Length: 253
Length: 309
Ligand SMILES: Nc1ncnc2c1ncn2[C@@H]1O[C@H](COP(=O)(O)OP(=O)(O)OP(=O)(O)O)[C@@H](O)[C@H]1O
Ligand SMILES: [Mg+2]
Image (cartoon, rainbow over all chains, first blue to last red; front, side, top):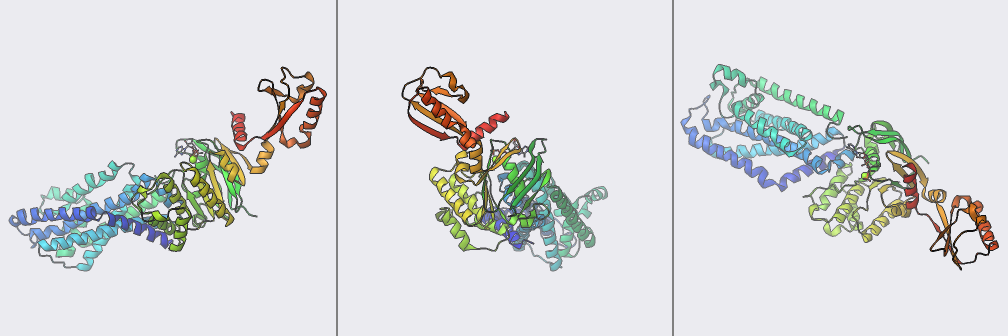
């Protein structure tokens, strides 16, 4: 393993994060705060408790998941797309680094960043609602696993994209809607049976449900299924990346 | 001595179907300066890009320091530093962090002393904390050189290093190249400026439409292909040439004041200068002065291109 290279990529990416600290931290924190004010304080007081949890607290895991998904994808996709766009990718391709090391560097940095962001949002949420975390270790595990998994997806998107529109398309057109419809703001058990079944095809349901279980001890689906689905995505994305690298897809002519 | 780079039967067909390299064979000797000459689109960058790992070869093999560039890419690439043709740099990074980054990528532990020396050698030291986007084009070029040298490579590729670099800087760059060579680094450069190859290179390769049509010692190349021209400045202008001199294919120039004789330098004693001069004397043609000129690599190159057209 070329650990110097992994460290170089990782610190390079983290330095980029530090430079853009304002926009990368402030904006998600601000939008989450707005959600809390609107849904937690304003509307939430009129919504009865769900599964014995106040509505304001109920939406915390889902909101963190929402940021985690979109931030992981956009960080990682931007991280690898940008050198392709500017041409500085030549350095990576000419360096004695394996593809695995490149992925660890880029996706690792993106995952670190979005996981930290998730924790910041959690801390912000604690200012507004009384939080209770039933399974802290599992909570961190889900947090890390989701950050890593979706950073890998972001990496794939960053390699597939051939323009900034495509780069923004996936988070905007797929992830955010899926997250909103995936039980971020409600329990899917509140839906009519037909829509509940449809919703079960939404992968985000399993991520949010597992994460919520780690907070309040119950989710929409069993935690084992949530974990299995998360790991399933991880394996899927790893396989896609392996294919990309074997074929040199969009990296080498 | 074993060549430091061996390219065998290397071909490249791009996805568009365009055949950019056609079965290229080339050996680069350790410690030499090799100049790759060729017009736009000849395939110079493609060849370099394959050796450095940026482009996949279609067929053929490349070994760097005995290591196959695909199966043993780590060992091969560790030996190489590449200065690309395009000025591709980050914008928001500082000079220092950018150079340090490259060193890390190539698997070397941080070495601030080495990077300091490099930046000083390339007159970038006062810019070390500047963001790259604030540098001029020539400074960016030097930054790319610093990055390529950051991991102390044994082989340096310079793809048109002097494009957009002023005269002073160019001289400084050549000094650096010479000192690198003196320290044992092998240098492969591409250029359109033939004087550069003439000035710098030990050997020259000419690539045309994806084919390496010639690889030669620079001095040998100039000797072999070099035409020489003898110009005699006549005391009295001539209107016509005596028929007895027809075999020499002489030409009159400058309103008959100059007599021009083109000959092949490689012929040596058989070039016929002695007999020409004797015959001129017999004809009573007197000359005041004479000069000889050797064709430059530039003329050789243009000649080669025209021969194929
Ligand atoms: N990615 C690509 N896809 C298709 N054709 C390409 C690609 N890259 C280069 N070519 C073609 O291959 C040929 C060789 O290009 P290359 O860049 O190697 O030339 P070069 O000798 O470096 O030229 P120059 O002196 O202009 O830099 C050109 O005709 C070019 O159009
Ligand atoms: Mg080129």
